[in-house]
Image (cartoon, rainbow, N blue to C red; front, side, top):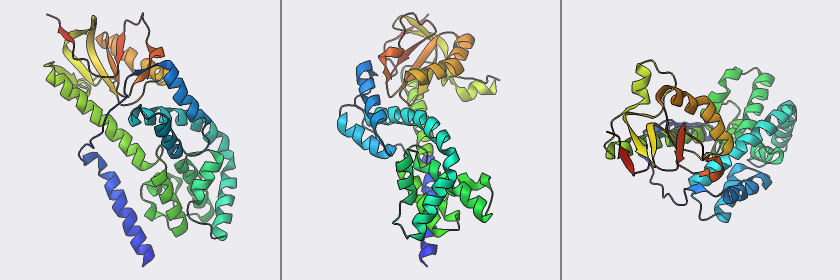
Length: 307
């Protein structure tokens, strides 16, 4: 009976996760979002890099130490820093899959309290869902159950995992992991869509005619900005032909990657434009001689129409 109830509970939660994109936007109080002083940015990064443990605990620490900084900005910086850490730690720990599995099995045999995989993740400084994936991989190999391609499905719906203990352990990982869980991935996607819609509304309010990326793709453009203006405008003396919305903090590495993979293509095709990092950016990414695009943390209202 308990097992049936647990499976029903998991499926209800999965239904909520899958439908989250259709929910109305959550009201979020935005404070402290701005092009950040480099010293403040370095202070935040230092706290993150010194922290040993799970990202959710680090987030709580950041909120406590930097109360004047918007939580979305802190989360975005945290996410970027943990992604860099995971590239090192996760790859380094891939050969330890047998060790993780043995630790998990021993804890199960000793009837360890729930949260076994979470404690393994904290011990080895790897995000819980990444450890859960490795343990699921080993579980499939050991018991010849399912295929490796099903691992992501097990994360999205942990009630599909036949082993009740493992199902509950993976479920806890998806709840506690605020960076790599299916829920967090869905929320990131939803957040990006929210700010694209916000940008479109602001552009309409400014009476600017434009084409969105869906329209441009219908005409064969592969790399498209979120907004392509029909008629260029000037912002701070800079001619703008397109606008790109990024619902994240634009640190040096992120900005460099997007410039190489997206912004330069927009510039080559459409001319100069505007990049918006809604959750801020360090002033160190600003270049006085940059002529291809300008960077803001909001949609400017001081628009000059070009006749």
